[in-house]
Amino acid sequence: MLRPNVIVVGSGLSALLTANYLSEHMNVIIFTKSSKNDNNSFLAQGGVACAIEHTDSWKLHYEDTLSAGCYHNEEDAVEVLTKMGPSELRHLIQKGMQFDKNGHGDYSLGLEGAHSKRRILHAGGDQTGKELMEWLQSTLSDKVLMVEHETVIRLLVENNNCMGVQTANANDERTDYFASYVVLATGGAGALYPYTSNNESITGMALSLACQAGAALTDLEFMQFHPTMLSVEGKAVGLISEAVRGEGAILQNSKSIRFMETVHPQKDLAPRDVVSRAIYHELEHGETVYLNIEDVNQFEERFPAITKLCRNHGIDLNKKRIPVVPGAHFYMGGIQTTIHGETTLSGLYAVGEASCNGVHGANRLASNSLLETIVFSKKLAEHLLIRKPTDKEVPWNRNSMMIRDLDLLQKRAVPLPDKSDIQHMMMKHAGIVRHEAGLTELKDWLLTYQPYWQAVQYFTEIFEIGDIEKIHMLHLSYLITESALQRQESRGAHYRSDHPVAKEAWRKVRIIHTEKKSKGVKERDFNEYHHAARDAAWFF
Image 1 (cartoon, rainbow, N blue to C red):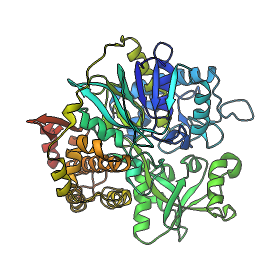
Image 2 (cartoon, rainbow, N blue to C red):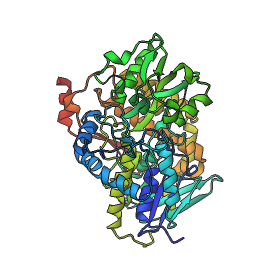
Image 3 (cartoon, helix red, strand yellow):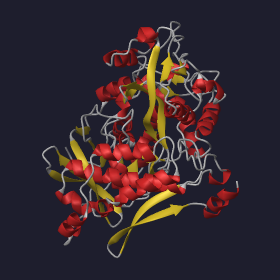
Image 4 (tube, one colour):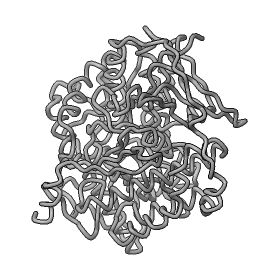
C-alpha cells in the first residue's frame, strides 16, 4: 500500500464511514487496538433517530435535541445533525442498508425517552449497530487497509502540526506512521467506570493523547449514564435498550412502586439523566429496581439480543421483571472540534463520540449517537476532500523524547493502580451524583499519580501498552474531576448534590482543557469562557 494520506484511529461506525467516504480519492489506513468488532458501534441496540416520517420534521427533532441537552448544545451543530440526517440516512438505504419494516412495508419507527415523535429506525430488532457495522464492513473500499491489534500510543507532532502516529503491537513492537491527516474516531470513555455499556477497550486514551499533543478538550464533566443496565449479582452485564421502555416497559422498585410517576412529566421516558438519578436514589435507599415488561408486545421477537442476554445470565423472562442499574454509557465531552471535525491542533481531526462539537449539549438525546456518526463523518470527509494532501516528508526528532532524570522520576512515583481501582474511584466520586468533598478526595488521589502523566511522553518509551493506557486513564480522570469541580451547578448528566439546580448563567459556559509547554515543562491551562457569567452564577 502507498503511504497513507489519512490515518484513522478506531474501528466503529465513525471510523468506517469516514474511511469509506475518503477512500474515493485518498489512501486510508485504519488502526484499532483490538479486533474490528471490539467497539461500541457493534453494541448499539436502540437505532437511529431521524425525522423521516411525514408527520415529523427536522425542527421537532432539533427542539427535542436541545431540550434533552439542557440547552447547552451548539445550535449550528444540532441544525446540521437534524437537517442532514434524513438525506444521509436515505443515501445509506439506497446503497443497501436495510432497516426493519412493519407488515405494511413502512419503516417500523420506535419511541425513546425525550422524543416527541416515533422516529427511531432499527435493524435486526435491537441489533441496529451490529447490522450497520456488518453492512459497512462488507462494503469497505479496497483502498482502506485495516490493521487490528495495534494500539496508537503517541501522536507525532512537530511545529504544532500532527504528522502521524506511533503504534505498538501485541509484541510491543513500535512503528511510526506518517500521513497528511490523522482522524481520531475511538469512541468515548465509558470504561473509566465499573458499570458501563461500553466495550472494555473504550478507556478514553485517545482523548488524553490528543490533550498531551496540544489539542483542546471540552465538556469533560458530562458523562451520560444509561438508566437500564442488566444487573446480575451486583454487576452490570449488558444494556437493556431504552426502546424497551418505548414499547411499554415501566420501572418499578421491589415494592412494585412506579417511582417515575412523580419524578418527571414524561415518567419512564424522561431524559436519561433524570431516570438514572431516580434509579440511583432508589438503590441508595436499599431498593432493587426492575424493568417490568408485561405490557411489551412480543418482547422476545422485538428484542432478540436482549432476550439472549437475559437468558445467558439466568433471568427468567416469564416473571416479566428484569433487574437494572445505571451504567456509564455515552460521553458528551471530548476533543473540541468544529462541525467539520477540526481540532485545535493542525493536522488532527476527531469524529463521533471522541469529538465534541457541542451537538449533544449536557445530555445526549436517545439514538442521536448513530445519526451523529453518519452526518459528521460525511462533514469531515467533505472537508478533507477539498484540501490537498501532501506527500512531503517531515523529519521526526526522536532525540527530543529523551529525559535524563527518568529513573529518578520513576523512583519518586508511587506504583500505578489497577484499572479496577481507577474505575471504583471514578464511580464513587465522579459518577451519577457528585459533590465537592468527594470530588476533592478523588482529585487528591489522582494527584499522587501526576508524575506519570506529566512525563507520559517519556514513560511511553519504556512502558508496555497496559501501563501506558493506565497513565492516560488517570490523566483523563483528573481532567474530568477538575471540570466537575469547576462547574458549580447541576445540568444534564452533571449533577452536584451541593449545587442541585441549573443556573442560567452557566448555560453554554464551556470548560476547556489544553496543555502548553513552558520552559520545557508541561503546564495545564484551564480556560473558561464567559468568566463574568461564571461569577454571576452565584446570583441565579
